[in-house]
Amino acid sequence: MADMLQVAIVDDEPLARARLKRLLARAGGVNVVFECGDVDALLEEAARTPVELVFLDIEMPGGDGFSALRRWPGSRPQIAFVTAYEEHGVKAFDSRALDYLLKPVSAARLQETLDRANEVLAAVREKAGEASRAPQISVTVGNRRDLLAIADIDAVIARRNYLELHAGERQYVIRRTLHEFHASLKSAEFIQLHRSIVVRRGAIRAVKPIGSGRYQLELRGGQRLQTGRNYRALVQDLMS
Image 1: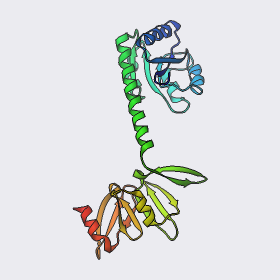
Image 2: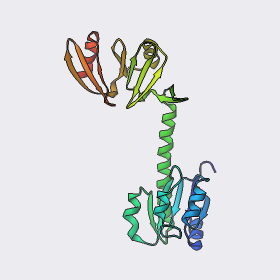
Image 3: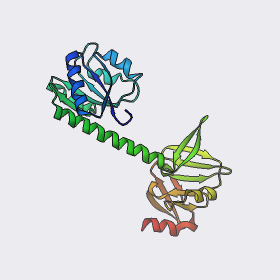
C-alpha cells in the first residue's frame, strides 16, 4: 500500500461512486481510502485520514465541492473534480484543481488523471528528498531548535561574542567564531568581504562603490552591508 496512490471518492450518488471505484480498481496502483456522499462527511474524514488525491463531485448536499476546498482541514491534497456539468471548469482550475472530469468518466480519461497525479507526487517527493539531503545547521528559534539550510543563508555577521545569520528577512543567532563557521561551510559560494562579514555570492543583488576601496552590497532580503577596503579585489572579481 505504501507506493499506491491513496485516494478518496466524494459523490452524493452511490452508483457514481461505485462506478468510479470499479474503474480505479481496473486501473491498478490505487487504494481507495474512504468514500462519502456529502461535504460535511468529507471534511470530517479528511481531518483524520490523509489522502493524496480526492475525486470530488461539485453539486452535493451540505455545500458544493468548492466550499469543501475553502473549509479543508490542514494541507489540501490534489483535487480532481468529477461532475456532469461543464460550466464549472474555469472555477475548478482557478481553485488549482489537478483535473476536471465530466461524467461518465472513461477509463482512458481516468488514467490520464492518475498519471498526472503520480507525476506531481513524484516531483514533490524528489524536492523533499533534495531538501533533506541539503547541508543544514541547527539554530534556535524561540524555545525550540530548527534546521536551517546552508543554501538559505545570505550573510553571516560577527558581533562581539556571537554570529548573526541572515536568511532572507529572517535572522538567527549562533555561538561560533566567524573563522570557524566560514571554514565549516566548505563552499566557495561563501566569501569573506569584511573582517566581520561573510556573504553568499548568490544572495548579492547589487554592488555600489562608496569610495576609499569600499563597496555597499545589497542582498536579496534588502540588507545593505559595507565591505572592507582590504577585500576590494574580491569585490571587483564579483563585478567582473
